[in-house]
Image (tube, rainbow over all chains, first blue to last red; front, top):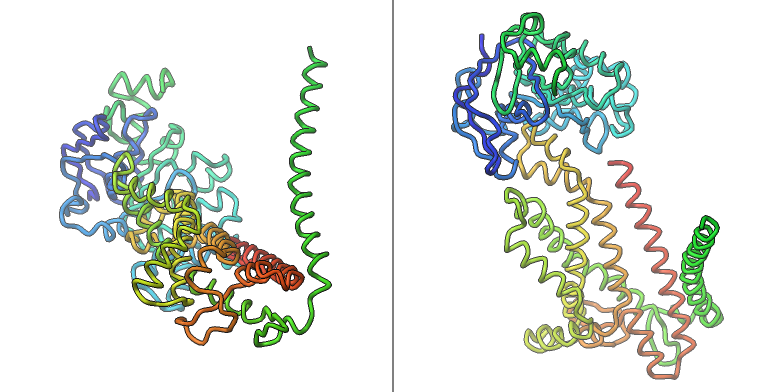
Length: 249
Length: 280
């Protein structure tokens, strides 16, 4: 089952042709990772999937992106799209408010007001993000006081609190230490039972460890897109091989 | 060579230190001077409810000052804050360079903030007092002051909004929050301490203003019963006392009260800003 179907997608930032004729299908209940050197377009593609590129300056997009068959760039409501396709950013970005209010912000945005329901959602989200035990006694404390790793897991919990179908992650562990990174990877492996996860990473070992499928990007094109295991053991393209063996990038 | 460098380093450090010291000393000297001159003349009669030429009570002026401050702030803050929200959150986004209208608004605001207050006073006199026929009144004064502090409020709100990291906005958009909700629930609360700092500065200007008020709110020493009545603020009261030359000592006593008021205001707002920032 496919969650995203991407057809002949082109993206320009001003004069810069950032994504060139991308065609790919992304599987449901899977972890798909995007790898490639900086500036190769992997983050741009990720942001196209929940239309976060809309706020980028001078950005033009052509082609088709379908979410379970529905056209993302058609008359779908952007806010509904972003509710269904959650996002976790490179730098942990908890809002400057309490842990509880951070998690409750999303559900409140989508109209949930009852305290009882919000309490349940907050607890479930934090438990799903495996951070409930650490935070249950500091729900009323400011989220800015947490460690980087805790903040990032809080952001994952916050994204899950609006019950999305898909989670997009833009290098979610690049600002974290190895132990926090390990915790988040463990969490992702657990989460893929229920969510479809697309992760952009600079870290090839990370892609190899956690993802089911991997796409290798270079200069705005998808060079190779296949099962992670086969890509890392026998890459089909010479450039993929050069990249994953560390010859450039 | 090394020795010479060290020597210059010492000299520069001394210069900076003495500059810092002299600015503190200047402030301490002014405060001390006012306290020495004014404290002995603070008498209960200065605080009696009604002004007469015998007791030269500052009570009506004190009350008028508070009312005037509230009125002007109430007029200027919503306008300045929403203008800043427009500039930062709506107009400046989506184009690479700030577009022409934003530039125009910025230049206008900057020009407005450079105009001497007496010019605002004159404008208030011609427009609010004469043309709109509001007479010398609190309302005319408050409108004049509101125009005067508007650029200040706008600029400080703008700075505060610009200082809010974009990752907060992205985070909110990423959860499916619309523009309005993002601006009012996430961005504005984060910017509040900075906006408040601007309001404090503006309050300082209102409390210290005379020129713009003499021509618009008038100088009647009474507690105004409605906004259409004339009244004098503490600064105008001081100006009148020392101008007449009969009650200079009471003028100093008034200065002490004004000083205490400003200090209390500053401490209170610093505290509330801290609370806002910490609780946020």
